[in-house]
Image (cartoon, rainbow, N blue to C red; front, side, top):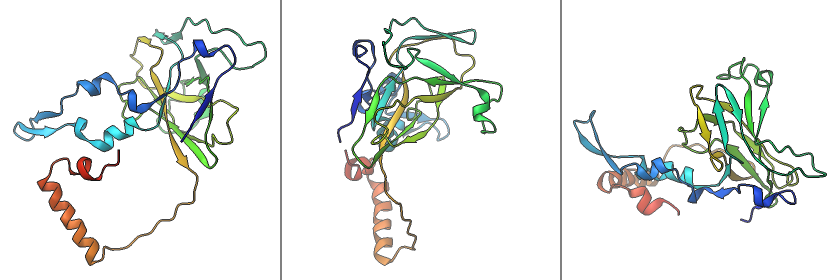
Amino acid sequence: MKIAFSCLPGWDAFLQKPTLASGSLPDWLREMPAVSKSAVLADAEVRTLKQCPPFLDAMRDGILFPLATDVTVKDGSFSWDWDLPAHPKARMTRSPLGVHVPEQALKVPGVDENHFAIKFNNFWTISLPEGWSLLFGHPANRLDLPFRTLFGLVDCDRWSDGYVHFPALWSDPDFEGTLPAGTPVAQAWPIKRQELELSFAEMDSAGLERHLELQNALQEEPGLYRKIYRQK
């Protein structure tokens, strides 16, 4: 699938570009050991999330959208110094951040009614093939980030000349420091628009036999899913 991005004339040299998530795993994951001893299990060795393909594949799949420039957080305020030039015609903001007033998330569980929500501004339009949408949300399993990006689904095959921005809740009130340019602020996964049909049934004898064989194989072969079933 080809996904096309475009920006305003004269801005390409100033902008961070979205990247494939497969090449942007965080340092903490690379540094995580593959096995660890569990105090709960009398120091028995257990495999860590580094050996969990579904956990890793969620982080590797799709596209990561970066923070446009360094943003400093201090005393509850956000600041930046960025020399993105003004465009003579376009109305697009040059600010890497915007806000949503508290009333826009009225009665949403987990949202402080006295706090603004931030909005990470995205400076790239996105074009997908006909029939495809993008599901945007918080970068998968990135609980280390001091914010939580909200999820949204956009029909980017049609909304290809407008921008998609990323509202987020600031989740770490004690954070002070600089979020560097390129910090992933959203992840997007292509979703094909099609009607879903759900089917339910008990296993027949053949299905039960396959299930039991798989359960036995899981006990005998660590990493069975990764070795045989996972589609790279």
